[in-house]
Length: 275
Length: 189
Image (cartoon, rainbow over all chains, first blue to last red; front, side):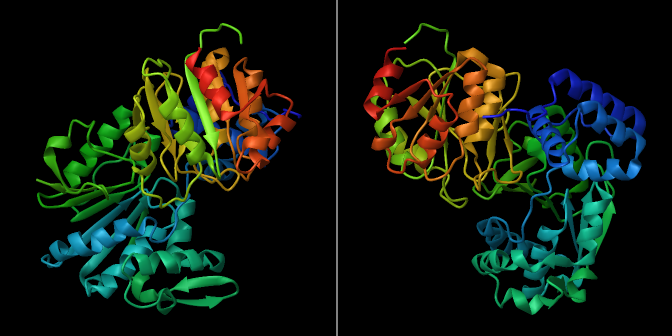
């Protein structure tokens, strides 16, 4: 068996991250190392770089390539209605509380290509809440936000999404919400006009509004404890008492200095209520 | 088998592996000291506590799902959570990752085996069980190259032999054992 795969070493990664901070002021030093290494190794293999130095040269000499590299480095694996039980819990337990608000602000922190934003918009629509809602989608990466804004999703994904939608308690058919052309599904303008996408880096940027619900799913697992806590501080600042925080299936506030500000609304689905 | 300061056992498997693990883990001595990590393929929506609960009911060892940032502790059997890759950091804590599937699998056995091999080098034992896919073969090779010990389930005794056969083909498997022999081997470490 041939084993020629190029793998970045701990020292090379350290040095690489330092160069990125210097040139682009992008700091990945608080990210989980093993994931980061896997991501870099994946780029090295997929794009057939002959050496770490070649990759590093490409990254520092070409800002467009850097932007692509960031997209590869941060995990953008997402789907609509991922973990249907979670969306069902939002619908059944959080929506009735949101319905008491005159105006509903929701923040998807680290929204990637927007699949969850669209999922939530659809459920809000069916609960007659979308009209008075505004969904903010943020990510550190402008390229994924561009995709999110477009409302275009590849049709190959729709079968899974439709099944997820039904399991989430969707009341109609997912196909009601898009039109298909050239292998792409374009989601309806009535959903999109309720969304605002902007670049926001959880590691370095401040709170920018107050929200009734913050969703940040499968983002914090890539951060070290210090950065996780910093982000929890940011969320705590951005939620009023009675606001909701939703995390990924394996993420928790339990180890955070901010845990006393919250109580579980639904432990299984990782939804907290701010006290 | 040679005396070596082993510090971790990683066990991977796919189709049939829950049954295989149900045979192995309950038979381990209550004094078994090494941490064990189980990476078993199953559906993304499979109930998270299922494997942990059925194993705990029958085993003297402490069984739990691996959590992000949790330090790898002695005398504990960790189950890799469904729909996540399980990695080990250089400070011997777990981290989780929901990136692309590897060999159509998340958790992927290769991902955990390779990550463990990197940090545990010759102190690692990798065991690959029954399965209908080739995940784990590269991981086994990586463990052997890092100086660790590699074992696969004897293909004739596996519910599906694709996985053990793929590992054997890498030429990096040191022991081919039945499940009873695996139990014996572990209890005599």
